[in-house]
Figure 1 (cartoon, rainbow, N blue to C red):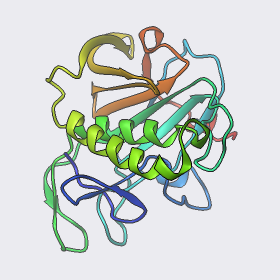
Figure 2 (cartoon, rainbow, N blue to C red):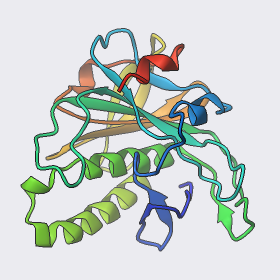
Figure 3 (cartoon, one colour):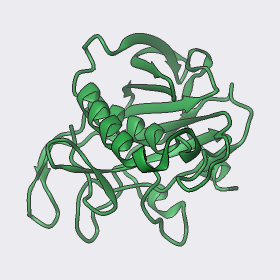
Length: 225
């Protein structure tokens, strides 16, 4: 699984750090990191007629000029922030991850693994965990719960062929594509591949069985938040 930036991230069980989707501070122009990416972005296809919104993109290569390695495009209601006790509503978030080979980090302090569908699964699971409202959990136990769920998400993402996942076929640009899919009490997560990228998604209140993915032609459709 790809090791991502150490800034503002969640620590995986082996000590590596991966940022929770949407947790990083974005640039002044929220589209800037998306427009500079060297890979296509995916969102829900034209079958989705609801609201679309943008989460900050991230880099898996530490250091100046690291570039964009992944990003998330939201659909429906924006999930509650960690300090908000309101209900999260209905949403689906699509996580696009660049295909990257194993390489040295930009600051030359370590090695980054090649990205894989497990990378997309981990980012999607982390994103879903971050949307669970505090009101559903005892405040004193929330951090323990987050740590446990983060460890579980990491283990599950590393074993997409294991019994924790089922196969779900969904359209990508109109063509059927197999994904690994998992449901929990807090929502669902899926991960797989798409032309040119690795693809993950997570959601709650929106059935994963009825969605499809497509290349995003106009990112401005997601910049109206």
